[in-house]
Length: 62
Image: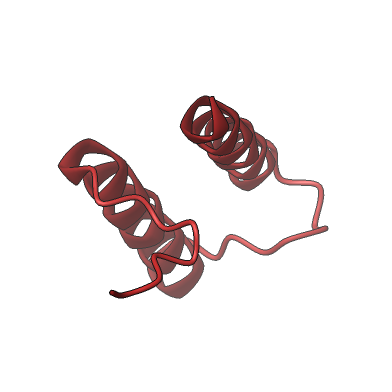
């Protein structure tokens, strides 16, 4: 038996996570995005990612 540690095995959730990570890396490395710098796009992406994470956690708990 293996413990799942609450991780999702859903390909859709994995794809969303990878997409957000890719956008964050490209944004910070090539577009100059920084947290707390007052830029709107990184803040919106962070808020959307947090909302999606809470939604996934709540739906997985039933």
